[in-house]
Image 1: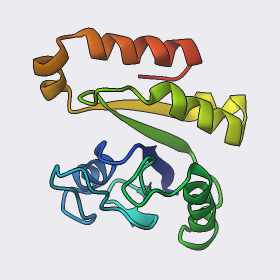
Image 2 (image 1 turned 135 degrees about the vertical axis):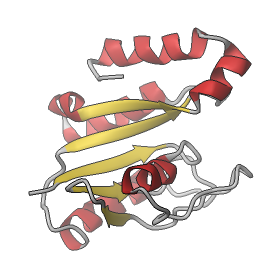
Image 3 (image 1 turned 30 degrees about the vertical axis):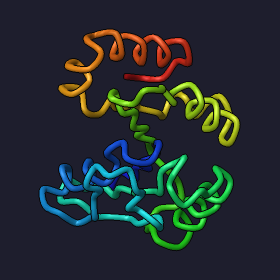
Image 4 (image 1 turned 180 degrees about the horizontal axis):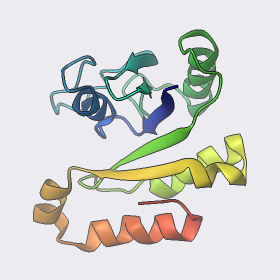
Length: 155
């Protein structure tokens, strides 16, 4: 049986790139760094690692969708696009290069939507660490790690 993981996070934080890395080939379209959202609809990808990955539109995307609209699309995809009916893990991406950190907002949003127990199923992935180190030093990685610890999420 495969593991079913939801990829969530803000727009342009590497969710689709992660899908392609795990799949070992390009299966999901990715952005070119211009800031425009690429993933318009939730999609489920089967990987060769007995894993299904649900790639979702990013929060704060250029299409100005609300968190509720994105959440409804995720819920629809769970019931209609996947062979599983529940999520085994949530992979939350946080770009370490953004001027503002959205990790606290995203963890609170997931906790509000799914309850406090969801924090045990979240793995936070800090993306673009090499660029972050050039821009901010080690401060950004430390700050994201601290916020995850405060919520009880894994980083």
